[in-house]
Image 1 (cartoon, rainbow, N blue to C red):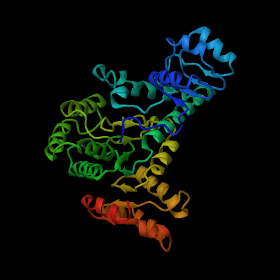
Image 2: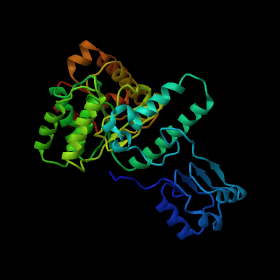
Image 3: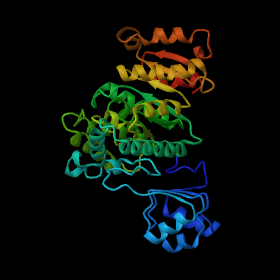
Image 4: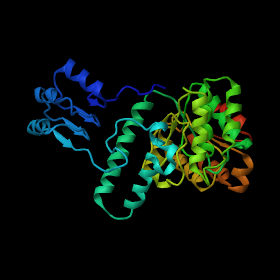
Length: 370
């Protein structure tokens, strides 16, 4: 998966390099969308270039350039001061960006500051804050679509409570590694536990098998994100530093559950404020199927969020669903009997499977057409 996939719309500009190339090659910015690009040093180009119908989203520019593009009929959405995040961002987050400042404590990171802002504004009814959240989440969705276009994505769902150092965590990591080595893009909910394990496995895919064994040992020093997110995240960055340039995968977490930090092993992080947008988007983009590891209420919700479009075929042909751990899904949380009843005599019946062991999941996914 490339670091930044080709745009679905070649009239979007998301970097200074793209801006310069467009002005040089086309000689016009008419109708273009320029997103989160600092244009303070491109005044001459803006004054000399047609910007009719252009839209500038969060692009700093000098006053004379702003006046000129306004006169052309362009729309200018100015940068918003004093925000811990950029609502107009053109790319997904990277772990280093979300965790910048971790050396001073997790509370100083962009991730923690964005969550604190969300906590302050989520219930005050301020349309400004809700508008900024909506713009941000739309920008993240756009960047996610650009990244994943043309890739085969398999979702791995499971609970955040799965601790580092457990065999269940190691199994989820091996699953992520095997799926990545098979050429699939692993996508998770982006949080701790089973989600982190699957992203870790994808990160480990390019290395020899011993790397994952050693990484699991190092991570075991901080098994949970409580009581210290700082220590938990620092252990992950120790692994990333020791084995740089790992495999790629996607994490799709949410500040709605901001007390759970994003895991640093997803190379691309699509973090949302709106959990409903995040949940639906994660499942809709898992075009090669979804593996459901043992979890609680959140994972149960995800199973049926995924089952509904498969039942109605509202997204086209049903996608594979593999539930792992027979006892968990038939006795502890008897989700499988209901899923099987829903699927009976429908197209999705041949696209669901229940397996006992996590090692069986890749073959089951393949058998179902994933």
